[in-house]
Image 1: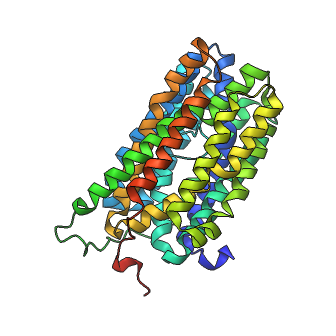
Image 2: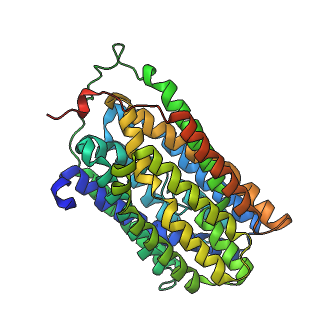
Length: 395
């Protein structure tokens, strides 16, 4: 059914998304273990995750102006070229600081889902390419592809040596560049909704949304996939082959849950779907802290993954629906930037907490803060209506 909606631009985005997230699926597991083998402590691993997210935030901030001025194609080709350079550095060096710098430059995902500049631009391309009634479904397919590809990547982590996997990341970067080069030329966006040609009128709502999304990401920084992988490795002794299987299943469960997002959104609305599924998933997250065995911890992780990412396509569709078309780059990059920046703060503290207090404490901290976010999101935006933008009207 998705074929009906996929034009050239959306098809290129889907191809790039699949190639990129396949590599993220194994890099998010490999790099913390690889760096630990090179001598980094838990605190060092936390610093690596923080710096990687800081690099992603910097790229998200830096790409907004080029994307608005030059269009998505030029911005995305430049980002893909940077990924190629990062992959080459990973392949060539065994110096920890070079590995960390390459992960920063390459926007390597260290969580269960993708954040950063690629995501912020690609969701705008999709929002403009499809009708509002189809937006949640196509964004669900976009995220489903990402999680499915990441699951396959996670399964491959123990099948090849690190240098071979880094070479795969390089090949994926080249494929992305080719896919992005096929995007349509830049067309200026109509700004009829803003007489002064700016996004100023939309920014108060965008900042309020971004502030709450930042709280969610700050909490999520305690339980990023790379840190969960380290927790399972350090607490229960799971090695790369077992971790690969665990995160393969986790990603597949996440991917399958995305099939429910459009139906739930149609039945209950975007915001209620976001809040309820996310809240219940955080109860399971807190439960991981008390898990007595690896089996129980993994089962709770799976239960969480069944629900925790249903809010991703609904959140993306909701943000695109509540701002006018000319403000979508600003909304996507601002919310992604605030999310990534907030998420970058906590992993360094998480590494210290794991090492100095207890390995399981971050699951409680992250889960409680995420529940606070869910309640605040509902209270703040339950009356916010979609934007009446001409760009969203049937042509």
